Length: 364
Image (tube, rainbow, N blue to C red):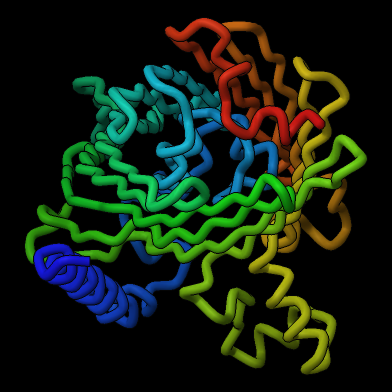
């Protein structure tokens, strides 16, 4: 190695150290926010893709070649094919709908849009007089960059300007996602690490009342069986918040609710499970994928003791063709029901799925 190459490598190493130091220094600030309603732009944490929701709602180590996975791990783009287009739509409760769209520009860059529409409303006063109609929506514009560090490892970044309009209030801010993705085809192993929604609120809804973004630190691993058509996903989410258990500080309220008393070991176990999401993908055929997910936190928080049903479970199916992929998911996020999600992947390259680097591994 000549002197110039050595100095260049040394400079890149120093820049990387500075970047990591800045990220770590901001974590304690964002980690103060709880995950339940104390932040803005919460739609950034929603799984906008049927593929994402089918495996429990969060996936950072997916083996699928779909471009809409960059919402969960921006570094995945480096291992997908050129000029891909994805469209996702979800019809949720009370006429709320949300979705996303992504398009790959080249081997390192892509653009996208996430949105949520809360519905149309009519402004009225206390006397019942009706005035103009208005709608409430939020948008995130995404510029994604990813780069291979070697044939099995990549890093990526999502830069996301956010616009939020809650009539008559509005806000805008900047968010970003940082991710690492690694896969080893010979060992049938995938892993990913992501820090999501690092950013600031530039214009608050109310002057000088700045709020935090929904920071997330997620880690995942995926393992495929060598002689069976199964892949197992293990995702550990919201690691920035060590304790995800709901705490009632008023002892009188605790007594009135007649809640079961858990031992210390049971409380620790319950908290670990709230951080955990388990998914399985089945490959019965090269053109058909079946996915199942289990989110313990959703089941614990969105069901009632007298009726749990299949709350926290999700089911998805994907159908592949030569130039497209269709995915459908139903996720029981609440004991009252759940959203139906549809995603469509289109491509402009012939024999797209045949050219995926690790497709052969997936369907062995």
